[in-house]
Image (cartoon, rainbow, N blue to C red; front, side, top):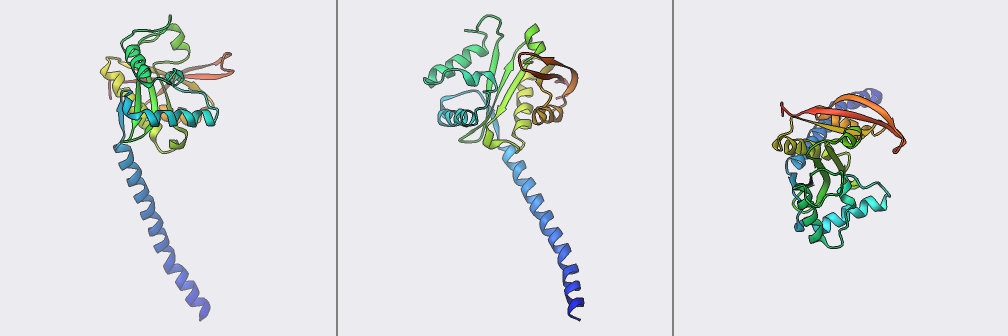
Length: 211
């Protein structure tokens, strides 16, 4: 009798457990969706200075490469940094061989979660490596869908710029980045070993006409 009661109790508790887990999963998904919906893509501004510095600190602490490349710009004088980024977006103050490029920040009300850089056109060098868009997510904000959202919003900026399609490149072993590109409609064109990076680099095109 005791076994029968125990067996019956176990059977009746399993559906409740499944429902509870299902509800928790739906609640977590809803929360994640709401958080992504609150994210915005903004031009660099003084308001986020403290968050920008903390983002850089996270990259430096983990000894990670600063991506996209404007993260490596001097930032001791923050106003000068903002001015430089604005000039670069207009094609001013660029080193030889560089094209006009716009930098954007993926933000909440108080924090920068990611940074993207949109190159307005391609050079032969960018067609080989670099492409139109580079992006990076703050280490503590990864694996939460922010990379896909950052790229999605940056693609909209590219379309507003008048581009019909954009090229993105990434290391073949960078599966997280590959996943983000594919989620945004990326189509693999080619891949080749790049000696300077000592890895295979893949090239993806994203058609902006249907966005």
